[in-house]
Amino acid sequence: MSAAPTWTSQDAEYARFATAQGSTVINAGIAKQWAGRLTELLRLRDYQDNWDGFGAQAPDPFIVDTAIAFLHALRDRDFTDPPQRVTLSPDGLVAIEWQIGAEFIRAEIGDGNDVEWMRARPGEETDFWTEPLPQMGEQAWQQLRRSPAAGAAVSASAR
Image (cartoon, rainbow, N blue to C red; front, top):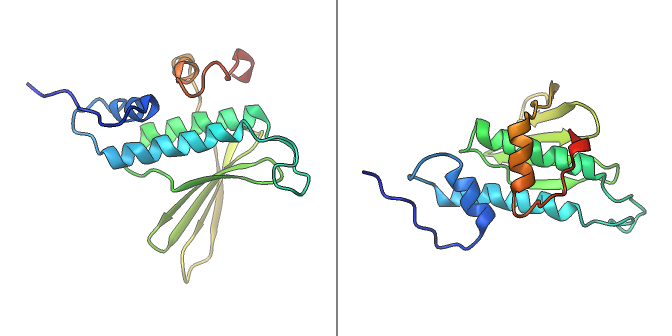
């Protein structure tokens, strides 16, 4: 009989990320990193016009919501490799980034149906490619809507 995980953090989103893996053996540090990236994406929703001091428009909520859904899909695909950072560019793209040793990987999400990837390694040419965004089924959208941090910000029209 396995014991249920014991949480020292009161962060509901942190606990949800960790327990979503269906295991009582949880790497709390990794779960916290995933939750941190989600929090960073959620904060982008609060950015207003001129958020960068150079006239950039407020981020498109659909692009931010798409990036949140993509983060969920990444976590479900490979829980052990959370990104180190998310960023917003002045042209409205959301980037999710990893630094793994000397390798740098960046995924950019815009208003299209693709993720644009870049991988840079010392001494090698930089790789660029695109792949379709993961399809978000109704269950995934419902989970995103139930997220305590996201609230009801993802509307049915975003599907």
